[in-house]
Amino acid sequence: MAIDKYAIREHIKGILIALGDDPEREGLKDTPDRVARMYEEVFEGMNYSNDEIAAMFDKSFEQPGYLTEDMVLVKDIEVFSYCEHHMALMYDMKVSIAYIPQGKVLGLSKIARIADMVAKRLQLQERIGTDIAYIMTKVTGSQDVAVVIEGCHSCMTARGIKSMGAKTVTTTLNGKFKEDSSLQNRLMMMLK
Image (cartoon, rainbow, N blue to C red; front, side, top):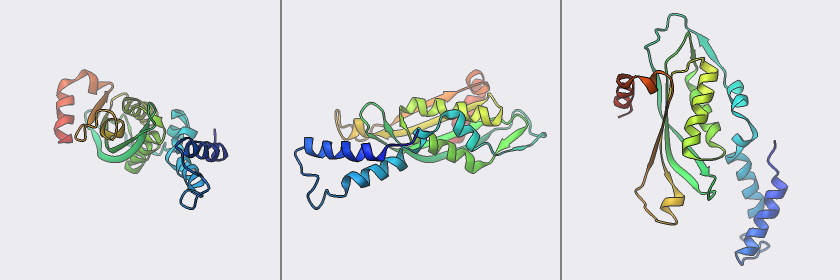
């Protein structure tokens, strides 16, 4: 599904009018088009299913010698997203993704690209972790995947409670990461 930039432009004009402003005034004349182009970029992930994202970034390498207790961790991948409840920015988000290879490894940049593409949707932080874990399992063939995300939500910091220092941390633990507390502890130590 392609993003309908024409419809976005028209709706942004309507929002400007609803806010009591004139979309034809000098400072706002190009705003609907700018917003439509921005939305096309920041919501790019909405064009793809999790399976399509997995196919896009399925660049794994056979590593038959990899031991099943070896862990690959890419931490502090910076992403942003928009919450689906208020369409408010989720920012200062750091995503850490770990997996235990099962005979093949994924190119490290692909891990960051998966996180970025999943975040480019109207999302919940919890679902970002679940979506990334699903895609990582599909691409690597490993059930042993962990995703830890820390982020700030402007729906809490800029409106409502206005709690500026609040951060939300979510974990998605699958396979051995869910079952093995010593592996969980090792992961958490590596994330410090």
